[in-house]
Image (cartoon, rainbow, N blue to C red; front, top):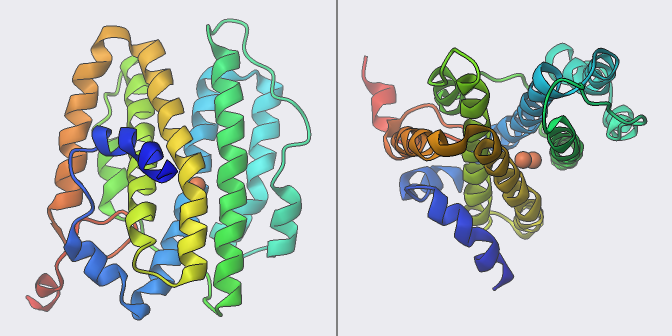
Length: 259
Ligand SMILES: [Fe+2]
Ligand SMILES: [Fe+2]
């Protein structure tokens, strides 16, 4: 019951549910490695997006360097196959505080929300990796799906709109991840289902945080841009897609055989 309350704002925000065609593919045991590998990379990307916003807009130069160092072991693992789960678990938490720029209003608000978000995404990264190792699923650096790429490509290229658009995209990606975990939990084994349900609370808060920041910085223009990205997001999720990933559209294998 509490999850219905948690998911209500997410389902109200998104214009369509995950298509059954994607779920039918996702429940096949042979799809589990790609789902987990992509989920792992998505956790890192979520951390990187928040870190980009922090470094670009909110924190001072010294804190910016500290943030880069924080993420480095996770990037070394994902892109250079260096390090171990034990190394990453030790690197999850940030040891010093992040100091805001003095010339940017609400810098401290962005810092408090985004530092917590990064810490949670890095913890999720370790959790996914642990599940993969337990199941003998090797990590592979896989290509990105069209989903986040297309959303980001549709952000405006001038300030301050680019900042607001990126916050709105962050809200959609977090909201869709949350919705997808909630439906996927019905189709996977109990260990994975428990893990996906455990992620809902933090992913729902990440969605709320991005949307709140977009409203603070975007003012009246936010509703129009939210509508634009909502339609685009709906198209990406409900249209046919033959690349199966965590955020793919309605999976359609028929196109794979057309030459
Ligand atoms: Fe996460
Ligand atoms: Fe998240």
